[in-house]
Length: 208
Image 1 (cartoon, one colour):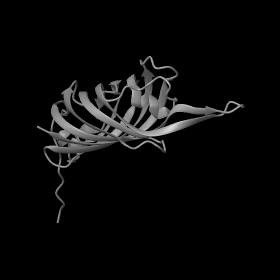
Image 2 (cartoon, one colour):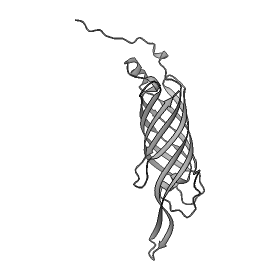
Image 3 (cartoon, helix red, strand yellow):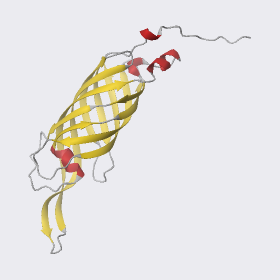
Image 4 (cartoon, one colour):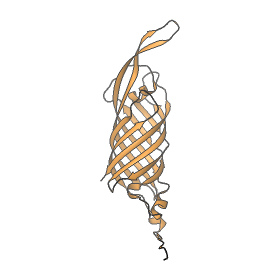
């Protein structure tokens, strides 16, 4: 018995990603022993720039939790400093613009794979502004650990990213991504230096 072969004759130019409006919950983490995952909630709109390139405009509120060294408690004769430590949290507002290329989108569609909610692999470059802390006024005598800049906020970042989005239903999506963030701080707090970090991100969203 001959096997039936399926051909998708959809014109390539008619295969396009979708415009989306979604609310989302996100979790981000990076390699730091005293940092808990950063949790965020927000809204994004995804516009279509071309058949496989979108532009995501995202605004969210995020909460950073960590233990950190605060004011210097003592300095030894040889210059060794001891610090007081405290558990703190900081809430920030964030706004980003993210050009995103779904590079395998057409092949997924032509091969009969799921493409609803722009499912599939993507590469992108989010440009993000993070506000200062909305719930803490950090003094200038805080020691400068890597989390301190994140807690104080007021930075702009560019983050090359690769990830995968999967549609759980016609309205519900999830995605995972890995990004390398180049952060430039605009805060006037002394000693905060620009930094680069790798992040692992997870997101679940509801689109309407």
